[in-house]
Every structure is written in C-alpha cells, then in structure tokens.
Amino acid sequence: MATNDLKKLRDQIDSIDSQLLELLNRRAEVVISVGKAKEGNDEVFYVPSREKAIYERLTAQNPGPFPNAAVTKIFREIISASLNMELPMRVAFLGPQSTFTHMAAMQQFGLSAQLVPLKSIPSVFEEVERDRAHYGVVPVENSTEGAVNHTLDMFIGSELQIIAEIMLEISHHLLSKTGNIEKIGKIVSHPQPLAQCRHWLEANMPDVPQVDVSSTAAAAQLAAEDESAAAIASQAAAVQYGLQVVKARIEDNPNNFTRFLVVGKKTPERSGQDKTSIMFSVKDQPGILYRMLEPFSKRQINLAKIESRPMKQKAWEYIFFLDLVGHIEDSAIAEAIEELRGHCHFLKILGSYPIFRQEKTGE
Image 1: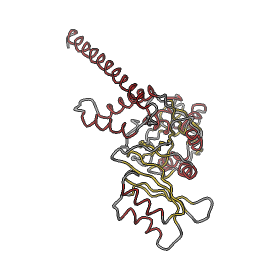
Image 2: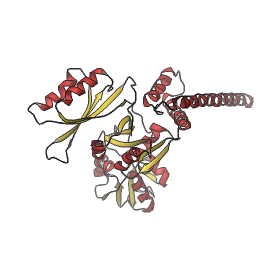
Image 3: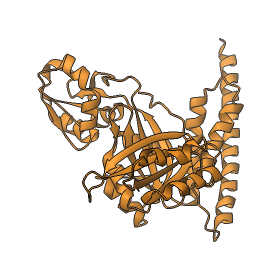
C-alpha cells in the first residue's frame, strides 16, 4: 500500500476517534442530568436490568465486523465510568486481588468502580450492611464442586438482597517461578481449585503434596516467594506475581463455571428475564416435599435450582434454597410463594434479579 493511502486511512481513524470522544462527552452530559433527576427521589443509581438491556440492544443492532464480545466489554467500561460520575461506587469482594471473585467484580462493575478486597464472605456482607460499600460480590456455586456453603449460610441472618448474578468461566493454570515442572515440590491453592483439578493432579503429579491456602492469589504470592512451590491460579495472578505457566487449563471439567452473587439493599426492577431466590424451612409432615414443590408446578414456574443446608440449631432439619425463573412482582411467583409459606416454619425472599448470560474470562 502506498504511503499516501496509509496516511489517509490513519487520518480517517483519527477523525472517527475524535467523533467517538465527542459522543462520549455528550453521553456523559446526559448521565449527569440523569443523576440530578434521581436526586431526592430515592432512585437506585445502579440498575442491572437497564445495563443488561443496553448490552442486548447494542449486540442485536451490531452489523459487524466489530465483535459483539468487544462491544459488551467497551460499553461495560463506558457504563462503569458513567456510574462513577453519578456517585463513586464502592464494591466489596472476597479478595485478595487477582482471585476469580475479583475478576467477576471487574466483569460486573468495570474498572472505574472502587473494588475493595476483603478476607472473608462475612466481611463482604458486613461492609455492605454498614454502608461502607454499595455492593458486595461473593461466590455461591461452582458447576463442578457445587455450593459455596459460607455464602448460603450468610443469607440466614442477613437482610441483604441479591441484586445480580455473574457467571464466569474458570480456567485454572499451574504456575511457578521457574516454569519447570521438575522443580515443583508442592502444589498450593484454595481447596476449591485443588478439587476442580483433582484428576489432572492424580494423573500427572500424584506424589507431589498439596497444600490448602486461603485463596488462589495467596497461592500465587507463595509461589512467587518459593521456587519449589507451584500455584493453581488464574492468568491474572500469573501476571500480577510474575509467574510462568507450567501447564494451562488443568481443570478436570472444560465447562467449569462459577456463579457469583452481587448483594445490596434494594431489589432491582423487572428486566423481563429474571430469577427470584428464596430460602425456607418446612414443617415436618408426611408428603411435605411434594407440597413444597406443588405451588410452583401447578403454575408452571420453572425451578432453576434447589439446594438444602442443615440447620445448625436443630439436628436433621434443613433449610432449602430455591431459584425460580421470574420476578417477585410477577403474580404467579408471588402467589406460589405465599402458598408455600403456609407449609413453612419461616420463608425469606432473597431477591429478584436479571438472569445474566455466561461470559468467558478470555484465559
């Protein structure tokens, strides 16, 4: 291509970039006006259903060749910056940085939000309950290893609501300082990743001892300080701690997803594709399990998940967690829950929130 032709194309790009910048600032002015309109009206400034609708509308309208995944990522950052012009958003998450929960928080809230790592799931709940953070992000279940019980237990005593869910594809990498598998004397990670890589470890490193630590990021930090240690962690942790990938994607299940919940104080409005979560304890009666499900079956309400946890106060009694497809403002959902309430010792609505599509981490 001639030099003049290349210059013309680059000039076109510069012109388009200037137009994009002008449009971004025009958008920002409208966002500021929206923020002023919300003042004094007790309006929720973060609306997951609105954000979801923006992504879906733009990807549906996108003619290409720019990929839809990139459209979503770019607008996530535009929305993140816009929200923080309305009100600087503080989001607590189960840390430290470079864990999968950190990646989930970035995926949901973008890089403009102030993301605050905390050491435990109860600490995340407390930070939001005491208004030191607007929202919290915690893991709730993995497609391979099942429920994160600490998170389920927190809802028993907390008044926080689930306001969104995040699905993140989880890829585990074996990382070390040297990148040499022969020099690995121990493998360190959180118990969940160790369990999710169990078969690979048994087949490839059966005699290497495994050590549990508090998080994948803590494992990466330990591996950075000890050349005999290898961590099972994310690519982001490898970058942050200067580690090399000994073996990529060692998870046993290639479709390995973790679901995270965003907790806050107010239930979002309907998005049109919602999920409602409840928890309850039923009375001990003959046929109670059938009657527990009957209110939903006869109204043709889809149950997306059923989970049970032992009650710590009473042996052999259980708390059930149910995810229903629909919003609590839907008449069928509200009626079914009220019918179920008659069979329960207690029943608690944990929130209604948009069903979010799965996204890959890009690892």
